[in-house]
Length: 522
Image (cartoon, rainbow, N blue to C red; front, side, top):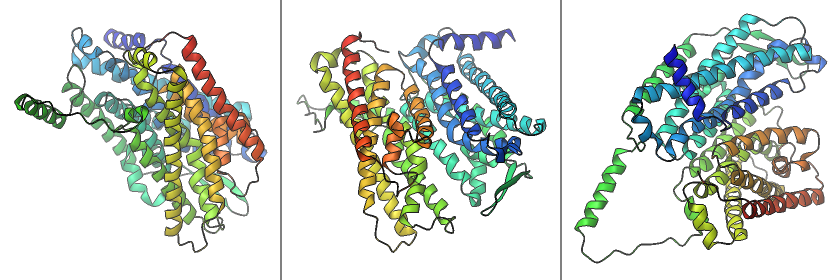
């Protein structure tokens, strides 16, 4: 027992004042706020306890994979910086280091799951749900949330161990969130939902909903579940726990290395040593400096995968609801743009911005950059590249939208309003790029600004529901894309003025911050 306390306390000291627990707290509060949104309506009070259990797996599948990726990244990334692995192995055996990370994550996920359970119960009593909660059902929900989330933590910890570049881990978490959401909307893919760990939130649901188009929600009922998902959860736990140890055991003290890279590197060194005295010319790509920094980086995986998953979800949901969604191209656009613009585009922009500032935050790159580059040009370069990648992302989403419409058999021409949706989305998205570039400049962590971007998307949804979209850049992008209603007539003067205001505000804040703060590196 003393050994476990010492191991966890060491990890706790390392994460002190790093905002790790704040990340989990914010995600937890967001889950509760989303679950309880509009549940004080008299229509829902009668079956509020069951409705909360019905909605929770969807919210968990959408938010927790990204949140736990941020958490695991923060725990492991500190060892990658400065090659701390070398120092740790001179004081502890490898198994103790590995178990310390595992046990710390276990304790954090346990606290998170207990807090979620308690807050759900408090919310129900405060809102005034009728009757009393089924404590056995809520106990089962707690066990499922804890076990599935801990498996995701182990998975993300392995990714963060293997790749010192934490962009890979964050992109994995974002893609996992989208995959979990995707599988919940396709009941026919129940086997895949049971197999992959991100789909376990949906596969373990034990509450069903009774509803129809005329009367709406009529009530909820318990579902009979097989034991298949339980065996897969247990199987993944064993695989990830032992697999993570095998990976860590064979990891060098300066990080994990892939054997094929070592082989290629040794071959190149051999060729260099045996070459003639004449030096080979170095080819420098004709690309802007900031583009060179993201060349061959994992952010392009998220760039390709997230819009693709969003398009598949939207198309399948459209094809399954043809009796309701009758406006062809316009209905398909809402299905494509709604989830992506609110829940996945903001953190994707966060990945772009965090990666662009990452190289300056590490080592002594700030010193070199500020000697050779004026501050205004440095900020403008990063902001311009981030905005360019955002533009390409929206272009990729637009191309997928057209291809999916052709797949759905649309014979009507593509709506000309698509150009306006895209143009307004680019302007609003540029404001999001400015906000995220500022956050990534001020917050030296790679992962925390990405988590804040995801939260910003949810807060933007709340602002849009209150018709105050112009007060937050994250809601400006979704409103510009007409994600909620393609036929919405918007005050273009107000939209453009507030978008330009946020762009100039955050650009000037970045310039001011660099000029008035000392250079700090990680």
